[in-house]
Length: 344
Image 1 (cartoon, rainbow, N blue to C red):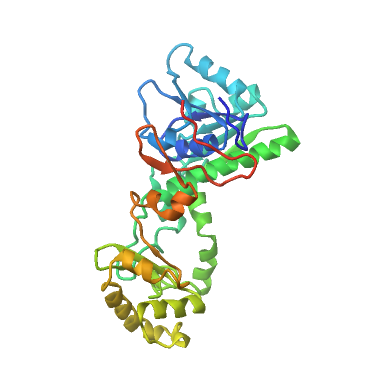
Image 2: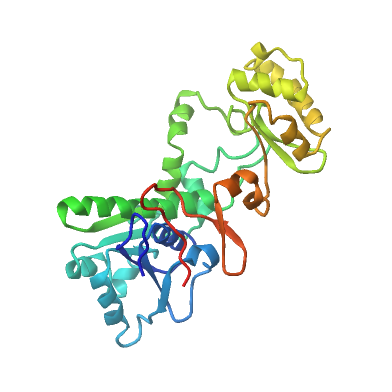
C-alpha cells in the first residue's frame, strides 16, 4: 500500500532490528513509502508503537530452506533495503550488497550500524552512549560540576542513526534519477553523532568553546537554562539576545542593567536571583506572566502534556494510535504531498 506523500511508490524493505532501523523505516513510511518490515520468526526487535506504524510486516527464517530465496525475491522488487546488522552478517547469510545489487542494480542498500563498515571498531558491540562517547558528542553534555550526561538515546540512535539512514536513502534515490543506478549507503551512528556536533569541534580546538557546563548554550549562562518553579515543574529560559534578555529581566522583576548581560563575573549572583524568583510562582503562572513579553521562555512540558498544548493542537503536531495514545505526526510538512500515518 502506498500513500500520497513525497515518497509514494517507493518500496522499502526494512530488516527489523533495534530502534534506529525501525525509526528510519517509520520516517520513510510517514512520507508515503511502502515499507515492508521483515523480521525473524522470533522477533529480535524491541520496536513497536509509533516506530512500526504504517508498515506491513512478515517473518522470514533465513536459515530455513527457501528462506533466502523468499527474501531475494522481495529484494528484486525493492527500491530501498535498510540493513541494521554488524558488518559481514548479511554477507554470511547470502544477501549482502554485492548479491542484492547484482540482482537489482537500482537498489539503494542502506547499512545502518554503530561504528560503520570499516575501521578498527567496526565489529565492536555498542549502544547509543558508546557512539556518542567515541564521536566526541557525549563529553560536552552535562553540568560543570558533574559527569557527562546520557541524553537518552535520541542523539545516537535516532538523530545520528535512523534519521541519517533515512536521509541517505532519499539522497541515493534522488541520485538514482540521474544515473539509473543504486548504491550502498554506509550510515554509521558514530558519524551521525559527530556531524550533529559540527559547529562545536572548531570551537574546542580554538578555545572558543570551553569545558562542559561553562558555555552560553550548555547551562553555563544563567539566561539560557532551566529553573524549578513553585510547583516542582520547570521553566526554560533562552534569553540569549539583548532584547530578549531585557524582557526576561522585566518579566522576572529584576532591576539588573541589561548592558551587563555578558559580564560573566555577575552570572553566579544573577543565577541565584533567577533561581529564587522563579520558585515564587508555578510554571503556568510564569507562562501567563511572560505572555505579553518576548523573552524566549517556555514551559518544560512533560511528554504526556505536550500533545495538549494549544500550539501543538493548532498545528496538529500529534496523532493518536488505535489505543488512543499520542504519537508525533509526520514531519516535515509538504504543501502538495503531505505525509500521513496509515493504519491498516
